[in-house]
Image 1 (cartoon, rainbow, N blue to C red):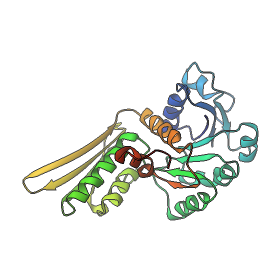
Image 2 (spheres, one colour):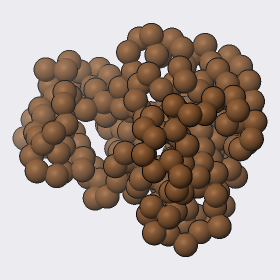
Image 3 (tube, rainbow, N blue to C red):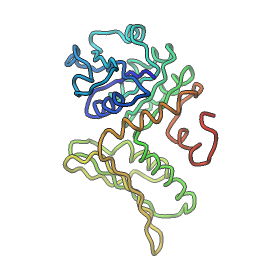
Image 4 (cartoon, one colour):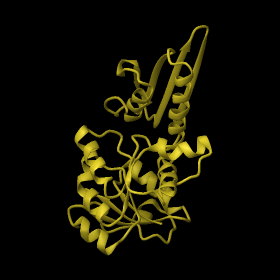
Length: 254
């Protein structure tokens, strides 16, 4: 399966690293906003021996429709910025390219745009695309259903420069129907990402913890999603849609 990667920051580079070493996927190209590295490939930059083209293009020098025409792909994996969806979204669905967005936070306008795109294409969005943290979300939901009155606090830890509450923590709060005031943020050093959900019962405590050791976890998650989107019909999907068949032994790709 052919992949086009949008964004080549820290997360994008880690995702490219995973794709380039996966036998079932080919990294056809990387699209970034800057002209830097435009004349080299992602595999050259990362020092990986791969047969994937992995050519780096700049948004400043190539039209997105031209890119799709000359370098067709099956999936777009987006690790750029929240406004990036406007750059490629319409062209992608017109070319039957499935969209996997790993943007940590979208405003309501972008969320509405994703819904609009999903009428004509397969669109997936998760604020945290690591498989482990979405297992945590699913398990936390089950525990909340068992004990709806339990006290819940969320602790999220990230690298010192990360601004605002993490999109994953916001998603946890939304899923468990708790206020953002119950989210406690820690910013220190180079922490990749850690999320802990604390369930406070009388006389006991349950803690669910997920920690990303390496950003390559984003790549593993994105490719897991891609495999499970292959036969999906048009619509807007999230990780719950992908994981539910595994938890409840339903037939995949319904």
